[in-house]
Every structure is written in structure tokens, then in C-alpha cells.
Amino acid sequence: MKILITGGSGFLGRNLVNELSKIKNYKIYVCDKIKIKFNKKNIFFTKCNLINANSFNKIIPNFDYIFHMAAELGVKNVINNPINTLNKNYISTKNVIEFAKINKKLKRIFFFSTSEVYSKLNKNNKMSETDKIEMPNIFHPRSSYWLSKILGEFLTINSKLPYTIFRVFNVYGPDIKTTHVIPSIFKKLKSKKKIIFENPGHIRCFIFINDAIKIFKLSMKTQFKNKILNVGNPSEPIKIKLLVKLTSQIINIKKNYSFVNLNNQSVNVRVPDIKRLEKLIGKKFQFIKLKDGLQYIKNQYEN
Figure: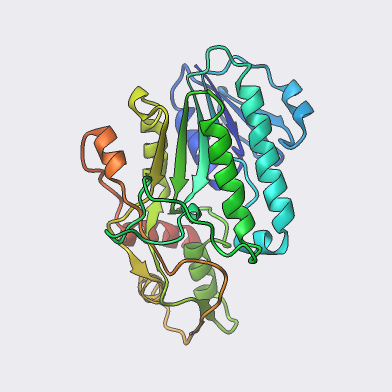
């Protein structure tokens, strides 16, 4: 079994690479512009720039599965470079799809989209794959990321390739960049500087990396073909201010901190509907509890 993973050096990517490499008859090929060391004989790395179609000349086709995880992301990066974000995400996805088409035995291409395609909750106070997609404020530069992912979904659906699209909600775990919500809270609480947290009333759901990877693996089964799938944990929605309080209790740090509300084009509440996921796997998914996941991260900061 040959599997190609673009963006395999990123947080989601390297965790998926390491998990799939545990299966001895799998050969995992990582395509990324940033090289990291993988200590497995069945993992192969190719340095490539996906916006350059010639980069694919370095990769021998005949893959069974392609996971397209590479993307320009990060709120500050997107806001500061909206056109670059849109161009890179669109062109890289277009190039990956064109490469995928020459793989004669391809069973599936997996496109990694985002929960940010949702602009509001539905009548069930959740976000479902069947909800109508509405364009956020076109004048805000952050909309470029939204648009790039919607374009990626459109390209994937209309590629005539077998596909699965993941709309990924907030994933966290050890070794994730501190630009993400949970590790940034740990970093700030450990800092000696004045601590300010953003948007205390925003409600988010967080899924631990092990659970996300488990869902990605499950999605390789046939019943997930040609589906859009929410990947998130709806069981413990939490306000940011309460998440900060919980984290400070877990690491046993008592500090003064303040909050500020920012208009960064982020919806106030983001909660996934996972009925489709549970219907496809045939049972209720058991998620790692938020407290347990935070404990894993605490251990990382203490070691």
C-alpha cells in the first residue's frame, strides 16, 4: 500500500505519518517544503513546493491514497497575507489533484478543509455538513482562507476522483505550535510578561490529536468515499475564559490576567455536528476528555 501525504511535516501530518507507518505493509511518502526526521524505514521524504507543478516530477505515482494536508494557515499569517494565502492554497490543491489523476489505482484523495467554512450555527446549535455555506465579510482579509478552502472542496468534488473531505475543528496535542489556542494559553500562563487573552466569550470545541488521527484512519474505509465529514469533538464546548481557568488549575499557576475582545472575523460559537461520522462508523465515538488532553500537554511543558 502506497500513501502520499502532503504537508506531512506539520502537526496533523506528522502524527498521521507516524500512525500509518505502524502498519508494516504501508509505504508512506511525505511531500513537504520543511524536512523533519522520521525514524521508520517505511517513511520516505521528498522536499517539494506544491505551487510548482514541476515538483511532482520528483514523485513516482501509483499511490493508493493521497492525503492533501499542506496549506497556508494561521490567523495572523492569513490576515497579513490574504492574496498569498488564497493563491497558494488554490494552486497547490489544483496541482495535487492533477497529480492524483495520473495515479491509476488511486482509491481516494483526502482533502483537509476547515471548520471555518461555517459562518453560523444551525437550528440545532451546531454546524453540519448539510448546512448552507455563506460567505463571511468579503472586506476582511481573513476571508481569503475561507475562500481558499471552499475552492479546494469544489475542486476535489468536481475532480471525478474518489474523495473524502475533512472539515477539521480545533485539534490540539503535544508539540503543536503555540500559535494555536490551547498551547498559547499554556505559554502565556508560564510567561513572566503581562498576560492578555483574546475573546473570552467565544465558545470552542477541542479534539485531541489521537482522536483526530483515529477518525482519519477510519475514513479510509469504503463507506467514507465521496463524503464531507466534520472532524471535531462536540461533547465539551467551552468558553475561552473557562478554558484559561481550567488550564491554570491544571498547571497550578495563579496569575493575574486580563481579556480583550478582538474583531478578527471569527464566529462566536463553533460546535460540530458529528451525526454523519457516527452513522458511518456505526457507533458513538468515544473522545478523550479535555482535562485528560490538557494533562498530556502539561506533562510536555514539565519535561
